[in-house]
Length: 415
Ligand code: AMP
Image (tube, rainbow, N blue to C red; front, side):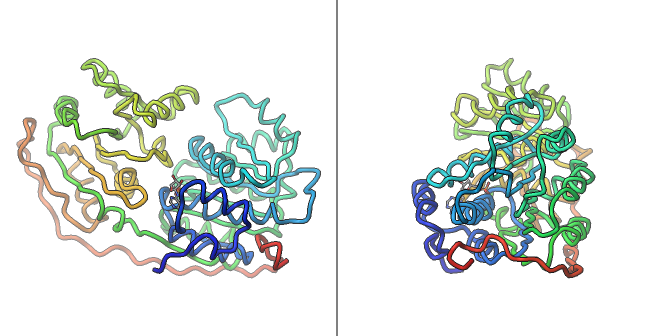
């Protein structure tokens, strides 16, 4: 596709300025495709992973809409709700609104659990335009009548697949029931299995569907390999692998939270700067771990799948799968952490005999054989056998009952 510049999308100058200051030259494909639809007020179903620039794809037209509206927007009741599954994603989205919206008068706030509620309540009282929230805390705030969603004009459901995986479906439905029917809705999901497509049908009205970077494209840029190892040798193998000084920033994945803690403990014992990030950690500890990793103080960050979702750390040179994920798509998400914004990266996976089946599923999902490294000191004796690959399941098109509604996110000039 040809390159699209932000000015071609006719966003207002203060927003273009903020984008320029970020150093963005051209739009990413999801931005080029989604922004025009959103500005026309259409509902949107976006199939895009974190790392594709999807946050700006909705944040920019939302800021443009709010800042270009009739002034003043008072009292400031939330006009936009962005719902996202994890605190990390919520913080990152809020940060995007801050950065892209620094030259316009649009107030945003973020509400998630694990931290005190009082400052969030105070911020709501002062008035906000954009509310970024995780489902649990938002429900608390609604039930305690600290927030009323009756003024929402634009609803963004981010990472819908993860939201369902994490068991938030009822919470999300409950929140949606609080929203006016007359609204613009946007849903992003990295994957579109049947249950997500059906869910999308219940919340979107005649959505435009945009899809970018199917997993295979990300995967192509990652240098992948697998090391066959006995379970008991995995920690020793990790230490061996980490001796490579070209590993500047490694994200290590374990399947469980306890597993993550055990790996960190082991690495620290050998003098490695390592930290863990997972759901059992308090918000402060998670932020410290992420910060250390971002600034380079911590070379190795050990994470579980859910905690790692949406972590946006540039320059992750290596992803190491200490445990293989039991869901093949998570493999794609994991290794995608190291191939951000067009860069390439390395993914090294450890595979013990109990994980051979997972590896077969992964090879099917990425549609290639992951090369096996034969030459390492902890090579397991067990043989791995491949099966013939099958073609991926076909996606089903979706239908949705009609509903009349006035357009949102249309620019000031066209309103
Ligand atoms: P996201 O998919 O929204 O998590 O964005 C991934 C990363 O891409 C973030 O670090 C953004 O700052 C960056 N980004 C977003 N849009 C662009 C763009 N048009 N050009 C370059 N980088 C971008």
